[in-house]
Image (cartoon, rainbow, N blue to C red):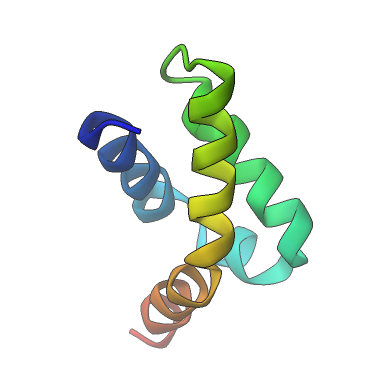
Length: 72
């Protein structure tokens, strides 16, 4: 996965509504973030798989970021 794809993912997280990130269950959130990111870039199937795994491994961080934004 390229740095460009990672930047796109984190831009999606940053620009997403807080309630969206906090209210979805894990599987739905991973699927939604993957879809939002791949809508901005054409990815190879292996890149999509890696992106999905990466998002899954960062769900706690993503939810922490959203929770912090909610508290501001």
